[in-house]
Image (cartoon, rainbow, N blue to C red; front, side, top):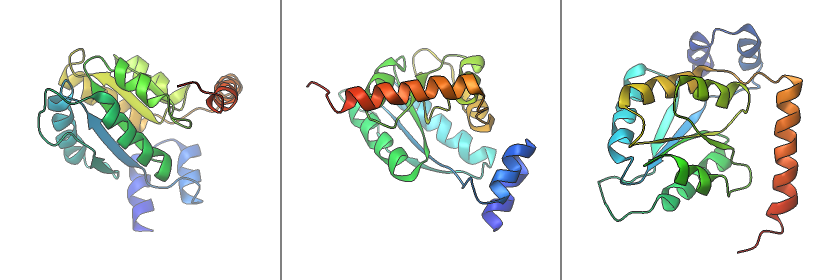
Length: 183
């Protein structure tokens, strides 16, 4: 019950507060990962998340030290597997965000988007209900990344008819083509 009360103090929207009280929304776990191009920004975001005092747990899936030879798909898979297992959220950072996005979206049930400003981060949650946020360590400055993460975490999904229709179409495409995927 204490976790729910802590979560409620950060949620201002009545619709979402009521859902949390009724136990329909649980505390979110954030999984974060990066490759060498996103390593430095990932480390700054971890400190930001801890300092902000969010009632979110977060877990770092690496890298744990800078390695110029690492590969973004390895970290995308680790983070996305946990997002799927726990219904959590993921943050992935590579040079531009595009590689992480591409790798993440290969996994059925992952809905990732590359964001590059506050507006795209807001729409990723509000319209698309994405469970993984991607951006570039070489293209997004740390202060902007912090703002984007904050907006993405605090923006509720607005399940309007048009958004649900589009999401359901994407899920239908995923279902149809993921079982017939070619190597």
